Image (tube, rainbow, N blue to C red; front, side, top):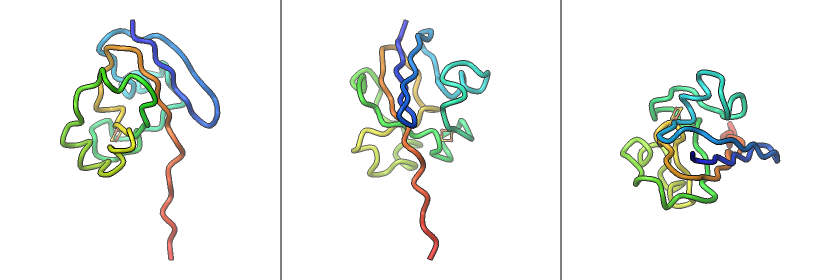
Amino acid sequence: MPKVTFHKNGQVFVDEVKPETNLVVRAGIKQFPYPNLRYECGMGKCSKCACKVLAGAEHLPPPNWKEKKQLGERLDQGFRLACQIWLTHDIELEQPEMVVAACS
Ligand code: FES
């Protein structure tokens, strides 16, 4: 069973999930990492579920076109869209606060 370590706001949440688990789907049915995972569309369109992969990235498939479109250069920093990945191995993720663009 994949072990998920999820960092958010300085706290760490850990749980095991079934293989082929999608964390946004789980959060949608109020299971770990609910209520700590930020997400919205579940379809790779909003990028609110973006998480930085701290460990286990080698077990993930390459980013799909939605991740490339939404994340751009953040892909190089290790970000993935949680709604677009199905977990088969242990993973450690961090979800930083959204960077809000300043209005001028
Ligand atoms: S929840 Fe919108 S892109 Fe993942």
